[in-house]
Image: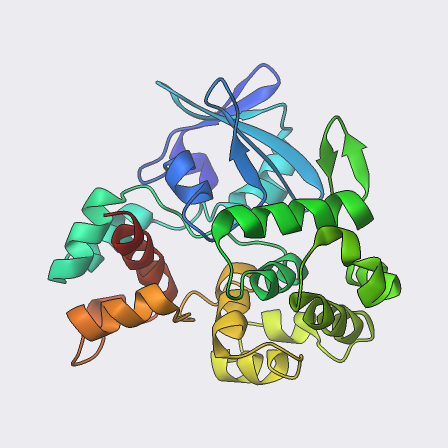
Length: 277
């Protein structure tokens, strides 16, 4: 599949040229919190304990210093590169509002993040804004993550977070969320929350949600975000203030049929479009 998408090796880098892949839109549309744009316009971040720098060039998106094995095992699934977003967007255009969203936000891809990181990040996101979420996540990684070289740190394991306890999280300044982070870490570390089971294709969104809401402070929205951004359940549909507004103003009679099966991807386009337009 990826071989059909003009993937080429350029020295120590890999360049891929595929439709519907805008790095900035994908990394800065509110679905992940560990990416930032550098002074020269590149994007840098860490996922699955691997630092990555991305550069958009006239030849496509360049993955800096990445082996073919790492690219195919980590970054292809992470950026959902094997999904035909061009065809998906054409399907979404059957709806008037979605047509506007995908036209103005063309290039967003849904990130497939590590499940524990997604869960913890969206617990932190509650009643919060994106700059502050990024700050708390960054401090958490610096406090308890593994130093990967330069200024990069891994996302800490649930075991490391659980061992820190609520008092140990004081330096990240998470406020009331600290107790929820610790409860989540404990339940994931001891196996009460079984991500391997949730990740199974046959595990439904409802079943996954029911597992995740066992965690203190995790309600419908955080559970749906975890399923969508961390578990590959692309029909999960998180509802926040922006999405509530979209549903009330644009879809009072229900969501369009054209997004069935991929409601979460459609939600990401609508969310970013409404938030930035």
